[in-house]
Length: 263
Ligand code: DGL
Image (cartoon, rainbow, N blue to C red; front, side, top):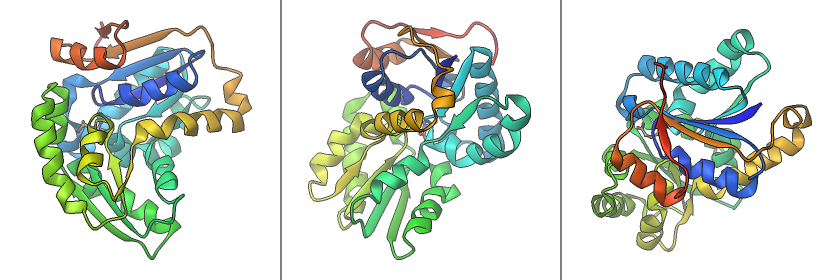
């Protein structure tokens, strides 16, 4: 069985790269639902239904472990998937998200004022606030949505992304840590770091590789079911040249393909 990685678009490739860099021997299937991007601007019902369809697709691709790399899908759908959907649909398949590992990483240093930048749907769900406060109820938290950033990154317009990042970075100048709570934001992490040298920037590409490795070491029963042929497949629900350009910056040799059947 393979490791599935799901995102609403191409941002999750950054997390996939972190997995492949740490654990190149496994087989990976990436699915980016580019036809329905941006999830951050959709209703909870839509996000839930797209995410369930994506998980069904990855199960059909023989994935035994699926990482929902999309923060928005994690925020809205992960609990439903883990507690209600998967136990009936595919009880042997594990589905993991990105929010809890990110929160754990953010609080592994003595953080007191934590900023979170994410999509509108993630911000409204308040998932980061809830999970951060569960670990430390004294934290000062500031969550801000930046809906303009994902379209600029997906469109490969990094000049625009820089302008937007600078504008949002200002809102977190007085925080000690800032969680980049969206799979696309690692692609602009250096812009945030330049604007906020005094703030610890938590970027999921720098933590998820170790977190998944640690998970597999602790769950041998899952690890032994995973195939290891270094076979990587990257699929999207809608293809265009800009997507291929963004993807090529991370994986120059691997083509992004549109899935044939409707997901
Ligand atoms: N991938 C999504 C996330 O991590 C952001 C992009 C979107 O709005 O679809 O939240």
